[in-house]
Length: 343
Image (tube, rainbow, N blue to C red; front, side, top):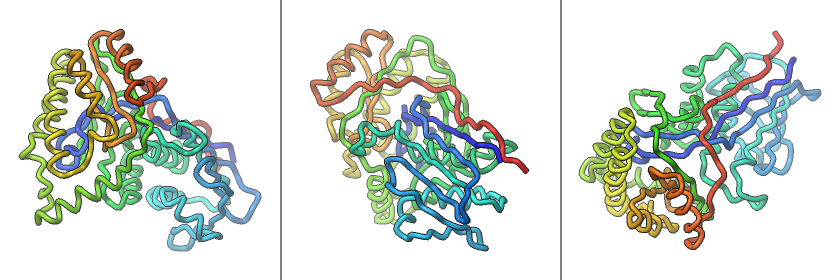
């Protein structure tokens, strides 16, 4: 068997976080921090998996007759729940034992384990699906499998936008149900800098809180997206993005940010906590746009401007608020798979 190597990029959500859960579109940008998977033939009777930075030991497992993974050390299972879900979704039909290396270290700021919030699990789901599914799987196939696996990993709460960004790369317009994916161009005259708050944020916790609000309201749409204008604002931004006018996109994002602020306050989500609100206010004063990316409350945010110097100056000044500019670029490559499994 040949060595199989696959990788997939992380993401930054530019618009549509939370709104995407209620049928509105989201826009995500793939970034060049990549999750990598390497598979080789194992000399052992069991499959083994190593994940630097995630689990300190190599873990061994076998696949039961029903396709489920059984760990030799039960403690390892909690660290590799995503692998279990992707394996189940892909259902690789091969009998030989494999050694898997899962590398998401580019998504950490330091060896201490502080995540940057750039979608490491979505990127890993896409890379794992590509490595296990085989070279014949199309990007659409990989996206369907990886989105399903990632949603199961998140207990049905996630949208899948980060997985789509990882599979297709560059800029992606995304709707959750029915699944719809649109490749978008980066508008001329629009410039960005990504900033890290230095504080981790839990997407799962915020989605669980939002789900609780929805159940309390007594309907699947009871979390109240529409009264805040969140979905309409996200749709308007996508329309502006398609037209490609940077000024109109920035104005649409200002409207979206205001709706997201109302939505966050209405559901006590703290999206603009972790220092984000101060940067929103400062950007507004400079005629720029700043917003948290994704669940908010920490992790990363983005400043957008029509002049590159304005974005760079804002990123430098954000250090006074405890934020750190990230050296990242857009990644147009999407999921990549090299080599092939021998028959």
